[in-house]
Image 1 (cartoon, rainbow, N blue to C red):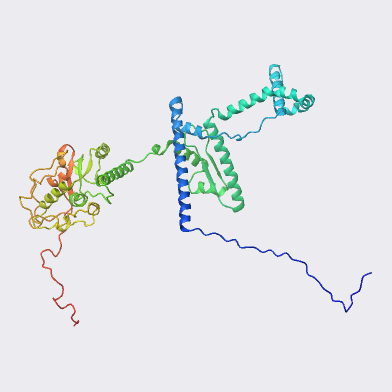
Image 2 (cartoon, rainbow, N blue to C red):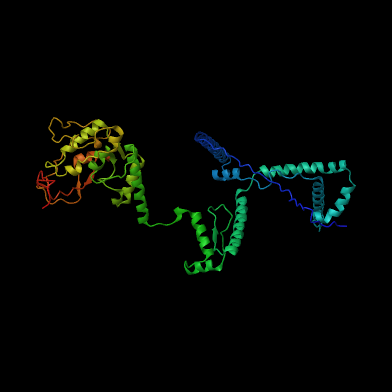
Length: 485
């Protein structure tokens, strides 16, 4: 009987005990700058060592491929490299052949060999003999099972190892590898198109005739095919065949016009000239200047040219003959045409001779003799720049060089000019913007092949419009702070 509650009784309700979980905050240790630097250096050292070891291994693999090619001489080095790098698709640790599997395989092979010898014999499968063989297998003891399958298992393991390390057909394996991957890409792209509606077009073609793969292409919808038919006036199959032909033939197989080849050849020669100029100067020269070579290049960078094969010294872009371009290119390749950097004595003699060749009134001195105070020679060798303070303003016969310095190439020797100086602007006719000159001084800076005279192009500077006008202060002297009127 349930006891009733009394008014005098105190009803005490105890709450259920609740487990309190106190989580202690984990204090993370902060690394010091020195520790972070040490960890970074250790990681960088590890990456450098790993990269060096990988490079050595790659070089060793290529060396082995080269040795195989020299030994067999049946294929290229790249073929043997791919042959070394290709791994077998079997498991790294294949499953051991069981006695039951060996027994079934051995009996099926024996039955099929007997059936081939009989007329009208039919080849059997393991499923046709499984019931019979299982009854025989159950009746055999463990020793009989081992004796019946030991030789077959040993022969099977030997054949499997031979298939793993033996010679593979590289092109056939590449064919199956390409086919499987392309089919997988098609399946993934089709599923992506179904999920998101994105349009995908894919083409895969071979690049060598030895490969077996035919052009593989697909599109996720007919809209892509309509695009090719409408815009490009072709279909996907024809474009794949054209792409395959282009890849097999290479860039050399594409016919280009004579003008395109000539422009490309001129650009290659210009790059080669600039590279040789940088090599002779010892630093990167921003630009190779052909006009006013003496003031723009020799005076600034101490560079002269030796063995120029053409009669005119100019930019390769101004040469119109293919034969002249070929002659210049071969001369640069054979180092017959080269740049030379003047030493201190030759450069000082050049400055004296160059000052002598200037016009008597100094019309072009502002253009021709302006020195680059931040030239590479001044910053590298701490030498005085060839400005007006370092080059004498007046020359006497005592300061002129009497003989050329010894040089291997007589055409490049720095000799005084034997030609008359340029006439003054008031005595000559109207100056042209660009004139051709065969001045001996300029020709000594651009040495021709076999000592021939090289025709150089110089550009005269336009004289100042206030030439001869006395110039003074704009305002009256002492009136700088006067109040405006």
